[in-house]
Image 1 (cartoon, rainbow, N blue to C red):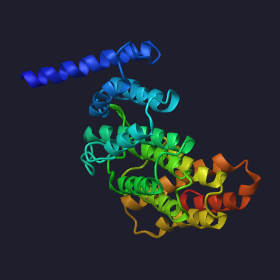
Image 2 (image 1 turned 45 degrees about the horizontal axis):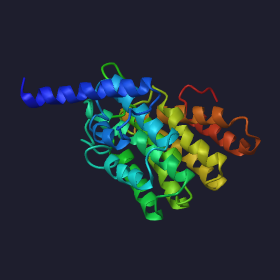
Image 3 (image 1 turned 180 degrees about the vertical axis):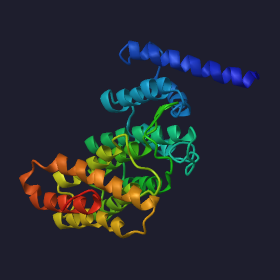
Image 4 (image 1 turned 45 degrees about the vertical axis):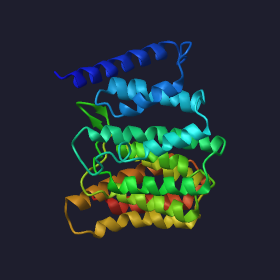
Amino acid sequence: MSKSVRTSEGTRTKLMLDLQRIEKDKYQLREGEQHQDFLPLLLQYIGDPEPELRDNLIYPMFYMWIKEEKRFNGEELRSLLTVLTDENHLFYNIGSVEDQSVFTRSFSALPIALIVQRHKQKQFLKQSEIEQLMHVMLRYYKEEKDLRGYITIGGWAHSASHGADVFVELVQCEESSVPMLREVLVAISGMLQNGKHIFCDEDDERLVNIVDTMIDQVLLPHQYLTDWVNSLAQCCNFPRSRSQVVARVNSKNFLRSLYFRRRQESRGNELNTVMLDTEAQLNRFSIN
């Protein structure tokens, strides 16, 4: 084993021990420690293949320090956002499938959602920066091809879900225009009709969060959302293929999740009717 490999393993082990200690101390640092000191290693190992480090230690650290304790100021969050959306994080080996790079991409999305939450509480990003971030996330949704949910060796990947978490925050920003929100709906359609992967780990619920937020906060005209729901049935006219099955089943499951999320809302009756009609078109086993 080379010296560099041993050094890397030693750094990783020390980071894990430090984060376990900080977690035990309720995320408080020792005298002389600064949260900035840990940031380079948190970013370096953000997509570690071991879920204990990636999912149980690093992400909770970001959650506590960004959202709960607000340890990072606006400039630090802006700089962090630049790194999280670069080619070594959100776009690391983008387009690859069935490898471990998905963990880096997917777990880079989660802190982005936390940063946008902070911006919503007290604005520190410019209009142009929110618009740029929206375009970045739309690009990510188009280019991400590894859509696995839970992986036996490695744990949660959930790229579609983690991306959806960012969109839930972005659509609520006052800087997000109606045309941008419409692009988000197009991106959701594209994710549902991805051609290869049927979502089986409740990604549909996370995608529904976006549309449910749009409906609840009246971010788009009701008729536009109704027309968009109707459009999901267009895949029934695609040539019969595996891609068509994926689009139909994902869209059907998405609508079911959205319907049950909204069914108690009296003002959503018209939309609920459209959802039921569209689901019936997508459901090959419907007797209607």
